[in-house]
Structure formats: structure tokens, C-alpha cells
Image (cartoon, rainbow, N blue to C red; front, side, top):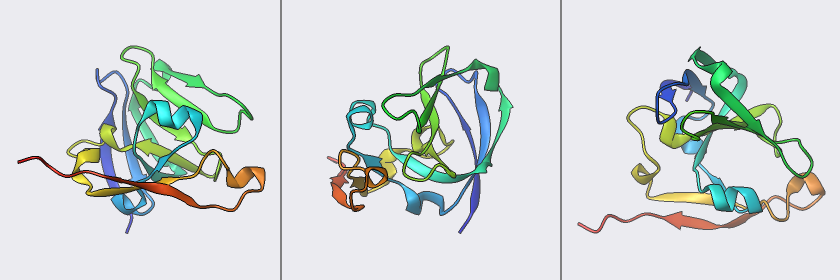
Length: 137
């Protein structure tokens, strides 16, 4: 199911509307060197699925290694908002924590894709594991 969500960075300088390909069912993480340090849960959108309402000019870009994945951040607060995927350059991964009314902690489990042995390098796509969240109360 495709659903539209309002989203923003932490400081509100960057605001956007995103149409998710599979709503929250697409939530995932990656264990490549960069994503492991970033720690965000991403949900999927097509390249035409993001409409910026304000602050697109306040985004900065980071690339590394092959330069295929393009990671975008707010210049003011530093929050990662989205990235163009290396595994599927026709998709954006959108930071779930940027979606209004949603949190990665709403999900009991999040699959972690193997980004160290990346499918774009000829490796078979596989899961590296699963992150689980349980409330303590």
C-alpha cells in the first residue's frame, strides 16, 4: 500500500512530503560501514516520491566508495533525511525518524541487509540479521 507522510529534519529547516512504496513494511537497516555508524532505519520511496516543501537548498550531500549512494543531510541540524540507494538507484531510502508521528521504536523488528557483501558487487542479497525492540515497561 502506498501512503503519503509529512516529514522534516530535527530543526524543521527541511520539510518534505513522501509517498512510500510499501509504507512502513519496507523498513530496514544496512550493516555497511557507513550505515552501521549512522544507525537509521530507512523506508522506501521511488525517486519521484519526495516533494520538498521547504529547505531543499539546506541539504548537503555525502557520497563514498562507488559514489552511487547519495546521502542527504540538513546543513543546520545534521539529520540524515534520505538517500538514493546503491542497491536500487531508482529508490530513495527515507529516514523513518523524520516521518511525523512515527519512530523506529514503533517497530518490533527491523531486518538488517548485508551491505558489506553488497549485491551491487556481485554478492547474493542476504539478511545480516534482525534488530528487535522491546519496551522495558
